[in-house]
Length: 595
Image (tube, rainbow, N blue to C red; front, side):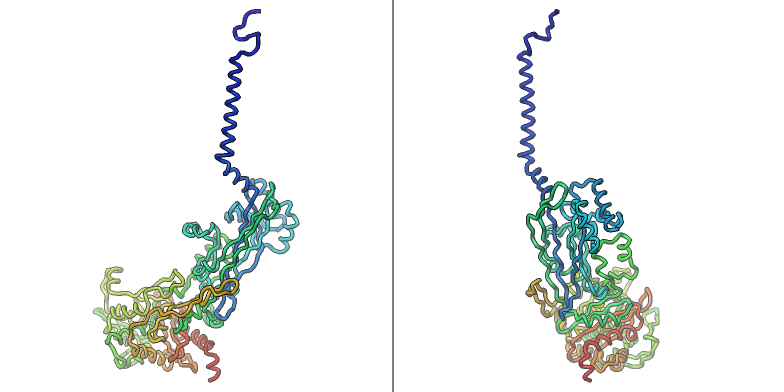
């Protein structure tokens, strides 16, 4: 047999044993290193993952606090509903398809509708998805009976927000909706999560911190198939606080009915306290539409509606005030000494103004003859006020308007108010690069031209007259109560400012507004009640004229101030005044019945 230098007949060499030992050491080192990495370096990570698979947290939404009228009527509340959820953690597409198919079979709902929950990604933490809202009793029974076919699927009680009065008060209450990414960026530090519901507008938004409460949770041990084995711990949710409004709901319903199906706004306030009794804007919307998911098409239908139902005309509408603004012009003239009560001008139905001798007409082309200031207010003579305004001057009129609260926010409750516009010569030059003309002052003096206001600003102005210069801070909330009924916060009257205006001049404006009711443009108010009024018909370049009514009663001791605005309503005495009449009738029904 030939000699083979590569093999030894005596068995493996010492060199072979050395290589084998080195291999074992290397393998052991790798194994030990991996073990150290998994147990020491990544131990907490994998332990957390294991716990996550074994332990699930299910958040329980806290019911929002309720909203009541001043008399204790529940205006906004909650309704328990049953929703179907699915734990999607570790769920593959095949298993998901089988489970959703079974749910569709049991409930009769389409797979498209069931999968919307996944498409909308309405997830709670830990991969829980709401797939069906508001289950029927029959659906609940079928799902419970077939729960062994539905691993990871469970039913949970939720609270759906209820607004029993539909569009009446919708802009006052506002609505709730899922938090968006932009909102979350600022609210996350306060514990908010993506898809949490928050107040979007109205009281729901302004008092969200009180209404929302604190969510609870259930800590559940789950099996490998996603079944719930046992409850480990739980924290019950804390119900939100209740809000008691200043709103007189009986009066609100009277205003709602009187305005009918017309677009407009009605706002009523107590001049002495600032408490708002009516807050109405039309057209409205049903806030409950926002409590359940809706499609992009449904969202577009609401948000792109040409009638703008989400638009709160009380504070977001900007309109020419028309003749209702004449009380500002008159007060400016009196305060500046440019006119006295006996100042007379003659109305021949029209007047030519400016270098171009443009013709400015009185309303209806009516000839009022020679009038003093009180009769000019009572009969709402435009020609009188054109002359008074030009003699007074744009700066003086503007300063009085600003002093009375125009061109700034009228309240600090809602943060989306549009402040309108009180123009000046400088503003026109900057805006249009044109000089201010006498015709601009004439238009401004009768609430036309570039003047824009909102109904709430008109209310504050007329309330200041009613309270003889005392401007009260508008309030919508009387108090905030805990779920147990304890008073958390009580809101009382607060003086915002005192107008630096001669009281004799304010009392004259009251007297002139009383004359409007007695023999002027509001004489058909026709109530056995001492009412101060001013009507207005505002020209509208985009359509029919707008109608205004502003007033308060009783004149000597005013308990309410009323502003009615009817969009494209025409004459104030025809469209707006009858709405105010119904409000006065209801508010003073006991007194009127006695008479």
